[in-house]
Length: 237
Length: 105
Image 1 (cartoon, rainbow over the protein chains, first blue to last red):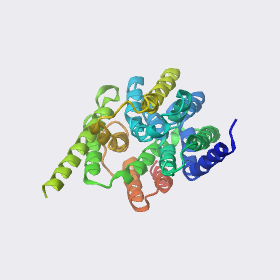
Image 2 (image 1 turned 135 degrees about the vertical axis):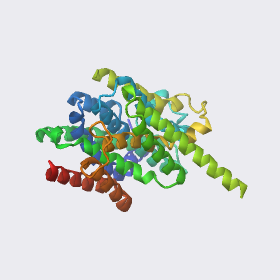
Image 3 (image 1 turned 30 degrees about the vertical axis):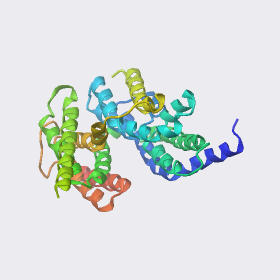
């Protein structure tokens, strides 16, 4: 099925993914462990890793399920949070547009932050003829790890009795804090984060957890405005 | 919560977002202002989840030393700033929180 070059590319992709994949293992385990305490069934937990395959969106959805957000709100948030993948696809489409629709569908399914990082590197090289096998290798390595360690996490979680009474919902908050802090590297980004945070308190009592989306939009608008103002100042000088 | 609808909906949305550019094979372009605003989305959404969870854990605003969620969140924030490591932030932040819970329950 694979010729020699294709096999080498496939294995190369798997190897390139390895550092990022190892870093993702604790999060796959954590996702599997926390999902049932948020109220998701074991089957739905595995199905989410198998079919959705989007780390940060999966965690955010757990947090929303835990506060009983309605389905429409959860799906809207999934859309907003995953929209950044359009940028990745836009950056990669030049290199995959000659492939069959089936190939493109599989490569799109596996387009995570991690595989994007791998492929941005790979496509810098001169010989791109069989690079889609490299892409497939990177995806396969990450996907099998994500799914199997989600299952392991579910299993570990079921060994610990009465976990929801420990205040483990805090694990979600502390995970998100660790994810937000690296973003705080510009005036625009810090303003966006502050605006979203203050709005989330002001709009906390809106029905259907609508406050989340309203606060996120305010945060994004503030960030965008500050970054535009900063650009203008630079061009005046 | 209808879990089948949840998973199916998340699948269609996530795959749709990842596939649309590849499906049209470069014949589709993306407005610049939207591209610029996307980088603000993850931190804004995450913050809008964290802040109510730690400042009003019981539904009302509670800024006090007896709010373990807030104290542990501030601790985790400092750890994240200092170590810049997600795993250390989770590990140390969670341990600190469990110790607080144990001491004050």
